[in-house]
Length: 497
Image 1 (cartoon, rainbow, N blue to C red):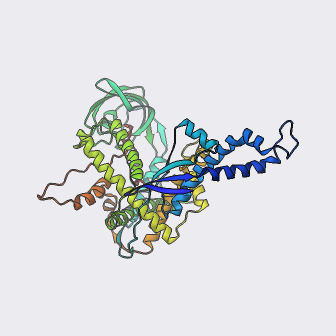
Image 2 (tube, rainbow, N blue to C red; image 1 turned 180 degrees about the vertical axis):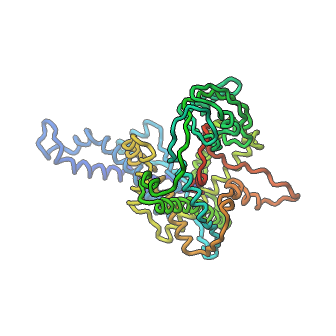
Image 3 (cartoon, rainbow, N blue to C red; image 1 turned 30 degrees about the vertical axis):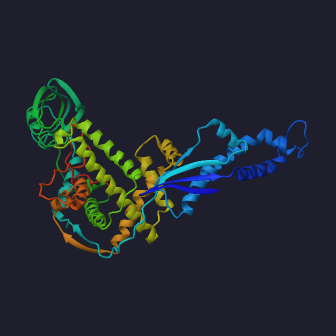
């Protein structure tokens, strides 16, 4: 076998592999010899079939098998022998000339094919003992726990139907249909929706207009969505809700005692308070984890500036762009509405994709050097987590991860990433800093800005220019249906890469 490098440009490589016809014929003859005593052909005794006859009958099919085996085994073996690691699946090209292909199958011509691929960049790991992070910590006070316990008790409060007019504190059961300019909109319709008047769960002005309503009443509720409403296509719009009041109910007493705890399946009110404290602590810890991780990634990003494989960047960019496009479509916005253009947005998200790929390679290298591994039990738990998200489709999910190339890697990657971060936290300078709840949950500089800042800092500008406005990565839009008040907002997504 002969290997010839035909391209070495940056991270791009192309090699030509030539397998001599004599080598293929020798392997084919070995296969035929092995098959001689096994095949049964009319007119010949077992083991007495002439080799020439076997070759005539099975030669081409065996040669095709050998060629397929060569294509499956040789490219990766050659890349490994060259001391390289491919960034993705190599692209293989063979001759499309039918006559030439038949000559190869007949053993009359060498088998030649080219392998095009990108290599993972080589870079020297920098010391991590110089990394420093501040870990924001929130002190959980008894008042906060008690507030959340009251919220739990509120949800478990008993209500009794009454005949009179609804007052603040009463619970009304309603059907409603919302319209804007006479057109119903997604998320603006519900049936048997229960609302405690005065809870401020619905759009401002909605609940006040139901005070005084009785069961059986039909009302036209007119409201204006807040300018900062999460569903941007509804923000600032005037809407009319056709509301049917189906029931008005009085609230029972709000009691926090062992009876309430038992109703919730717990042994005592103290146990309830303990669980609520643990929940608050867990939510805060998620925010703390993300802020600490972000600090680590930003510092690693400053340390490394090697070229990232274009194929990996392209794939990451496409994932990001699909989310951006889908979010814009859902919100009814355009890039101009976001004070940018599609061209500028593509450039910024391309830089974000490059950052994610580069940091992924750095964390992978750090993890490999540190011997970080993802156990089978961890993979199983991740798989079960995926299956629980799709009730009734467990078998389809299991089949997908078993049979789809790369699917298992998508489960392993975030686990590996978190374990590498844990490893780094054990070996770097971490200082705990007490902060308020508001400070902990405040947004830091968005990820796009962090990705573009590094690139912008490297550009020499003869004149000082105002920093361009960076568009924040799109966030999932929420439906119109009013949200219940929650102790804490949902934590940011698990991976920042």
